[in-house]
Length: 378
Ligand SMILES: *Cc1c(COP(=O)(O)O)cnc(C)c1O
Image 1: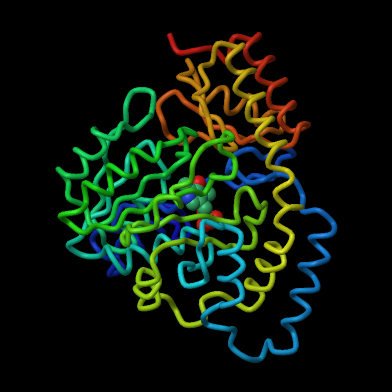
Image 2: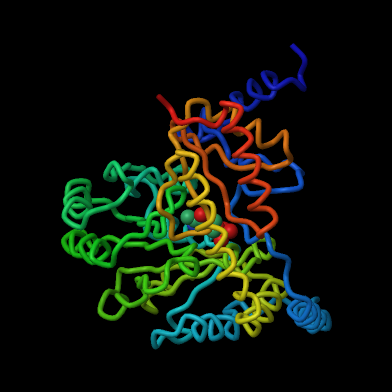
């Protein structure tokens, strides 16, 4: 057998002393294909404003003189800036950050999950949760949602009581469905973990895109020491390349994470870039209203084609079931538009782009519908 073939690699991987629970597993693998219109991983597709780029450059320049030294292990200035951004009476003691909220979630599982412990979330939801569980040897249990992808307080609480997980993650607005979850659900889930003393994580990666008036679970933090609100600069801030995720929680939760984080995990450069961006948060977030308008355009456009978009409070839209989602995905790619097949039967997910990108997607969908390719499942 060719030692460089895929089977050869697989065979050699199987010969390594890999942990049992990682055998046969697949890594996170959203395709990275260089096409003109990339609407597949929910990035903010607007470029950074010139004034913010200049501020970031100056911030990075400022780190150079001491780049021979380890960075501030406590990233104190950044934590204070994140607290100011979130408001809700939070201060630096309530804040924590890492290289993307994926790393934040991994640290939560390192501290509160692990062998003999359980993580629960409610699929269809973020595909990284089971992978983070596998990577930390945490058992993953899947809850269920209603047929319209919503969660009801009584139902979610009953599921949590039955499974008694050590960590629960509720993603809202939920990826990949866009569904916002009411604070009554978070309150009910938290109350359901009173006996097990579980950690309840609310993943608000898309909070900034929610319809006006949608409350953040940050409101629920006072008096709930096991509640954690996770956020990121990868989506609304348009800084996916920076790798900066963060959370707000009781100070003792951040103390638990200090036990598992790697020393100096946030580089001086990352801290400087994130700080400069936060100083210019208003300029960066100016694109959010446009993205929300493009998201609503997608919902209206797909609805007109009879392709059943799911109501969304995020910067993406799930639609279908389609008769042939693979043909639609390829039909879009042929026109230079990449969207995401998230492995949900018959459905596809598209991120809201700039007005021009969104138009390219919608125009192509109209063509594919007229050609009998983009049609609903029978
Ligand atoms: C994109 C996304 C994140 C953010 O990941 P980063 O590591 O911060 O880039 C977190 N949670 C969900 C549900 C996401 O979709």
